[in-house]
Image 1 (cartoon, rainbow, N blue to C red):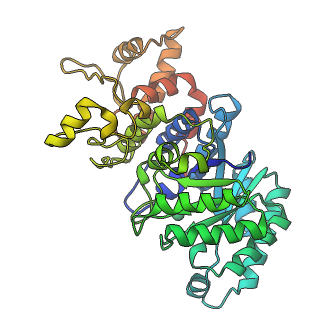
Image 2 (cartoon, protein in one colour):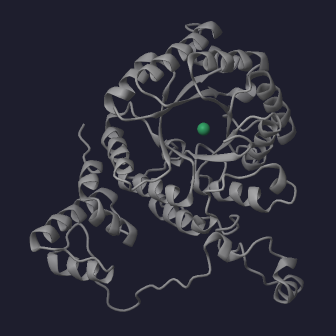
Length: 411
Ligand SMILES: [Zn+2]
């Protein structure tokens, strides 16, 4: 596992917790399916301590057991408090991967805890929580040092070593405010990795527009210190305030940046060709357009008009393009019905339902079976409140019991 960069996508936790951003549980599940298809190592699925997340998380763990999710590690997030860890495993008993989070900087410890917690209490709470998580069945534990970039390095080393002793598996270095720059983070991560020999996750925010740059520089510091590195991303960079490190841009940088290609080997399971699909779905599900100039997946990512550029690109595309549209899964014509169309959803009936599924190549053995799936489609649409996509309809037909569980939300 050493000396490679692994992607941990946090859209379903950091992305969805963002102000004015919403995602139905069915859409969170679709993101997990697409991330798995993309070959991403891990998805931070959400909050196992939250009652309304419980059924969705358990259903996704069932989906992994049933083979619907193949490699993607499904990981929960909670505060580094023993009571949170305990509740996480009570709510989601088959959870095997957990990240526990606590603020480590003086400014946050003083500002948040107002003297109720000292540095010693923070380390102790993390230590106890990690031990408890191991005891309750966690296979991997990540220790999130919130505001790590504004935390004294000696303290971070102490934090990581204490967690290592408690049985944790890696440290998440959170540049929570996006305050680090590439050179600083590279040096800090190098010192941290050399002192602890503990795998490191980079978790960087984009407040200064450097989220991808600092994540990659940090990962380089880890790899050069012979420590496995992970980069936290979100799809289309959706996340708190100015967002997080963008998934597709990060993969593009690892694959096509001149100097990074040799230095930072990317997890070989990653299939960039699914980028277009996942970016478009996330945009649809979140109801947030993809900026025109977004790397790889923006409308203008492969567009040329000005005289010199168009002439150059026509003669040799490599004059103005680092990679091809096909590399990110673009270029296929997308067909939309422009005439009569039959859809199925919240108020649909059996005839229309059968017509839609026939077109998807899915038939049902009995009328009873078809009506059961139709009812699920109605509820799924009630839940998402926007037209169901073909992949969502396929998923509902393939895993009806799991979908039924996802749709259960009881206050
Ligand atoms: Zn974050």
